[in-house]
Image (cartoon, rainbow, N blue to C red; front, side, top):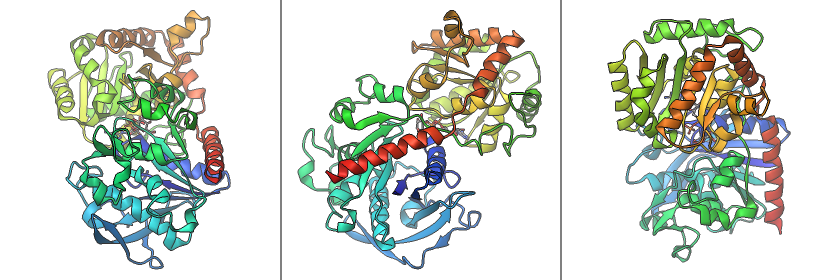
Amino acid sequence: MKVAFVASEVVPFAKTGGLADVAGSLPKEISNLGHDVKVFMPKYYSVDEYKFDLKYLDTVGEMQIRVGGIPRPVHVQKGFLPDSNTEVYFIDYSFHFHRHQIYTNDHDEDERFILFSKAVIELFQRLGWAPDIVNCNDWQTGLIPYYLKENYSWDRMFDKTASVFTIHNIGYQGRFSKETLDNGEIDHKYFYPGGPVEFHDSVSFLKTGIEFSELINTVSETYAAELLTHEYSAGMHDVLLSRENDFLGILNGVDYSIWNPKTDKYLPHHYDENDLSGKLLNKKFLLQHVGLPFDENKPLIGIISRLAIQKGFDIISAAIDDLMELDAQWVILGSGEPKYEHLFRSMAYMHPNQTAVYIGYNNELAHLIEAGADILLMPSHYEPCGLNQIYSLKYGTVPVVRKTGGLADTVHDWNEFNELGLDTGNGYSFYEYSGAALINSVKRAINDFKNKPVWKKIQTNGMAKDYSWKRSAEKYVDMYKHAIEKRRV
Ligand code: ADP
Ligand code: GLC
């Protein structure tokens, strides 16, 4: 099977969140199952072409990609996912992609991803490589299924190409004004109330991807069920309900060659479930690094996150005074909405011996916190999958989460399971979205932290579980086969 995996961020080249982790690991696993997989992404300014030894594809040369009626000169570079033969193609058009960040609020954000989507398809043509499957990810790639069936359908090489659209986050819908139709050469006949490219009088790339793909999936089973409800779908439930039979949830896996405390290249001390002594040394190192006093008996609570409303910062904010009263230390890494940056900066200012805050993006520190913290807090309002809590399970860092999406599918509450007579819990969770429920769960965790044998059991329950990609990659392959069949009828 030939699979094109198209994403706007891919580890290790460019990353803002978990999509990049998925796009950097799932394609390798699908290749390992014997398929021909190629990855496609934009060549941002931040992609280090020297470090990754990217090469211009002279055989392809310059492509003229029309956006807003104007042909734009686009070049293509090629590299590989690390330690693999999986090819990565970079769409290089500096006017669009050499910006200060990967995603922008610039007036031509629509044009950036129109160009990307068309260029990927024209690259298939230049390579003479007709994919059986194009796996699109999130709104940035939502036009591709449409283009394959409309603007490029004249090319018979795509007759059998099926599209799969993966939703990593319904909160980002790629919505633009009606002018986008002309910029993207999208047929006006599809733009009417309730039409396949229209969403509340705007053009939505996300909805277009859902409507024109053979199959749609999202990144956990619980989130798939939640997306069919009014509460969680950000307005898209009717769209998804109309495709309910073509919609499924597949839990993300993780790449243990990057996220494993036994081998993690960013850790000063390695450890595993048989010997956790290295974890304590990492805690010591982390606390020293961030300038907090070390106290083995005081739990260290970590947060690593995009600072977005999705992640539950309004309930943290509501509970902040009570949280600061608890006998715990905090280390927080994140960047995003200014009001939350401000919240955490002032928390560090008011409680300098208790709290360390790093505002920004720092991969090395993310690894160190996963290893050095005792507890990871993730009280998300919604969470399609969540990778941090899956990493933290492997690192013996006990997650405290809100029971939603992938958090509900991976974190099993210790007390809840105990009441059922089971000692298989691996963390703490709460359902009600409130500061009070959050505090209650954090308190339960702090309480059990003091009981060393219980805590160790919770840690090792989490560490023993295998969330590697293999099983989920097989589910993707089954989904691809099904999509191909659908395309053929
Ligand atoms: P999301 O994709 O919604 O941001 P995930 O939990 O799926 O949430 O993935 C987040 C990923 O981004 C993890 O790999 C996490 O370590 C990383 N991450 C988030 N914020 C930062 C940050 N400020 N610095 C470094 N890594 C971060
Ligand atoms: C999104 C979601 C996150 C998920 C990630 C990878 O950014 O917010 O929950 O883990 O995509 O699928």
